[in-house]
Amino acid sequence: MKELSLKSTIYSADFSELTDQERELIEQAKASTYNSYAPYSHFHVGAALLLKNGVIVPGCNQENAAFPAGICAERSALFAAGAQYPDQPVLMLAIAVRNSKGEFLAEPASPCGPCRQVLIETETRFKHPVRILLYGTDHTYVMDGIKELMPLSFTQI
Ligand code: THU
Image (cartoon, rainbow, N blue to C red; front, side, top):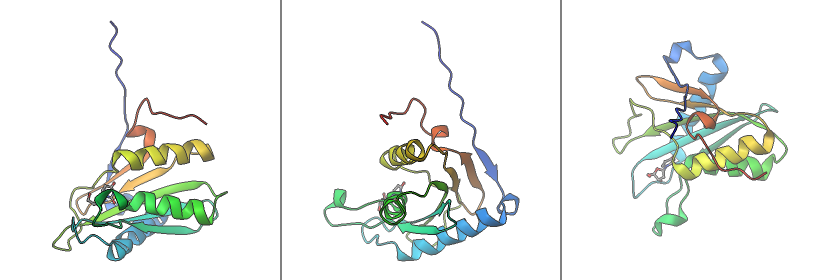
């Protein structure tokens, strides 16, 4: 049996190392955390997408008493973009989280499995990787495409 080693490249950046456009997207993701509806988890997730036409689409988690009926910030933004700008490739996604004390997390949070799968579909659909910025007050993780977080992913189209 052969061992198959898979490599992921993720950069850890100081906020000052990011471009103006990246910083702006993170600010939008941070602002979106204030629209999050999270009375159960108190985990306020904000997302912001940059589309090819320059439009920024925000998203945030929306919870529900029937837990599976809620949705994550990433998918809320990706589906809103799909509904409003179906032909626009998604270039970049920023995510930020505030905890139950209202503080931004020091360590970046990473997208859940279903959100990763939707990101795979987005990249496949537009034939373009989505640059991902996971914001934390200590550092921001940066990667060029969801494949860095999801090797051997499932696609059909
Ligand atoms: N959540 C997100 O919005 N994005 C993720 O990638 C992980 C989790 C939300 C779902 C739920 O409202 C809360 O965070 C706690 O899991």
